[in-house]
Every structure is written in structure tokens, then in C-alpha cells.
Length: 361
Ligand code: OSB
Ligand code: MG
Image (cartoon, rainbow, N blue to C red; front, side, top):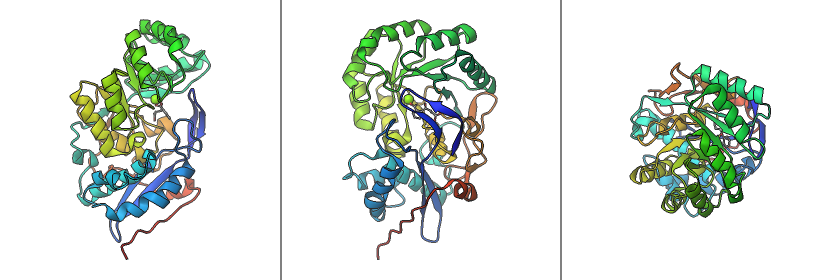
């Protein structure tokens, strides 16, 4: 799906989004949808369209029969022999959750114990190398109601844009995301950023380096929020114990789905670490799972869950996700993810389809 505007980060520039959608069908019964928000390249995350199709077909789908459909939470356990590939796993697991919620005729968020009927939206702005265009973009999103602005930073595009945004827009909720572009040698840049009272600095250092994040956190006042480094509950535990972060961005796809997201949410709550739900430019399908998780009690910051029209000319769900004037998204009360998946739109954008039949015979 073509993005309305290219999305540039410190690691890549995305023009079109390629991803894998998962449809699970109970024989003759309900359908559940999931999304594997991979890309063609392994630049944000090592999984790609090709690797996820392969892993799903060869190792994950064949395990579906061993899973009790009334307990999608068991899916990760059933595929625990497969190391990694959390996004591929998440796509199947989420489809099972959507299916279960539909069978039970309940909205997904209610099944998860969510407590909110509206969730708060922020917007993530890619690297726009031109200051005027950046300021225009910030102004437009604030006018639309978004409750927090996050900008992507990289070397040569970090302090200046923050300084300008503060100058023009004052004390708005603002944070930066470095996508692992810096090292501990750049501590002065983060100390300088301390002066601008950002809500957080997201993933400043290498995605494997919890130790150096802990060291950086001791040297700066702004809370560090980890994204890429948190690949599951074990990383969350280590990061919290080491003091590598004070906030966690939970991306349901990155950590292996709903169950793992909730485990991280609960562990963080117990340890006084606030969390929020991140995204990867998901289609309206993946967005449904982000919205459901964003209703949990320990979500303490605006989420990277924007309206469909922030990303795409047209979404593949009906109704598309829309932003209320107060910068929230209303949690749908219909069964499952709560939006209808438009099969004709999916056909329009699909490059190929892979059908896997799992049977006990
Ligand atoms: O680092 O949070 C990130 C998009 C793709 C990959 C990584 C990230 C992002 C975003 C966009 O920041 C979040 C969204 O609105 O979906
Ligand atoms: Mg991020």
C-alpha cells in the first residue's frame, strides 16, 4: 500500500508498505485476521515478507492444530521451539485472538481486560530534512488534534528540529526517536536535548545494548524509552533490572503478539515502568490490535496509533480508523478487532496469496 508521504527514519525510507496479512478460517465458520508488519528489507527488524511467509508455512501453521482455539494465549508456547520470528508468530496469534473474540461475540479489548473506551493518539513524523516542511507538518497534526508529536532523529537532524519545534509550538508533548542511530560517545547530544524537556528519547543506542542504555540513562535526565531492544518479556525484565529505560514502547508485532505484549505490560506495571503502544505503519487490521492493547491500565503515554488517513489514501477496513477532535480514537464495540475487513480492497493490493490447510486427517 502506497503511503501518503514517504516515511524516513535513521535506518530507511519507506514509500510503499509491503506486509503480510493473515486470515485464519475455522472450517465452515468464523474468520480471524492478523497482520505481520514486516517490510521487504531487514532494516528495522530482521524478519521480512519472504522470511515470514517461509516460517509461517514451514513451522508455524502446521502447529495450529495443537492449539486449543479457545486459548490463543497458548500459541506462543506451541511454537516455542522456533527461535525468534516474533512478528510471524504475532501475525498468527493475533488472527487467533480476532477469531476467538468473534466466536465469543465480544470486542477484543474486553476479552483482554481493557479498561478504556477511547485511546490517546500521538503521531510519528519521519525525518523531513527541511525545517519549514517539518514545522508545517507539526502544525497540521496538532490542528487535527494529535496529543503528542514524535519526530525521528539522526546525526545532523536532532537538536535543531527540537529547538525549532519548541520555539514555534512551545511546551507541547514532544519526543524523539533515534532508531538506534547513536553511541555512548554522543552523550553530549542527549545532554543538550535534556534542556528541551522531552517526554522521552526513544531507542537512542544500539538495539542489542542494554548495558550502554543503562549508562546513558544515568547521565541524562530525559527518560529513555526502549523500542527495538525489547524483543520480548526477557528483554523487558533485563532492561528494567539494569535501569536501561524508564519507559517501554510495546509493539505487539515486535514482541510476538497479544499475550507477550500483556506480559510486558503487567511486568512493567508491577515495577512502576509506564508503557505505551507503538506501531509500524500498520494497515487497519494491525491497528485494531494496537487499539485493543492501548485500553490496558498501564498505558500512560499517547500511542503511535494514528488515524488511517495519516498513513494511507484508503485503508482496507471499514470504517477506517478516525481521530476524534480531542486526539483520541474510539475503541470499537463490535466483535473482534471491531472493524470490517474489505476483501475487495485486499485483492486490489495483494501481490500474492498463500493458502495453507491444516487438518488432522
Ligand atoms: O521506530 O517506532 C518506530 C515505523 C516503522 C518502524 C519503526 C517505527 C515506526 C514509527 C511509526 O515510528 C509509528 C506508527 O505510526 O505506526
Ligand atoms: Mg521507535
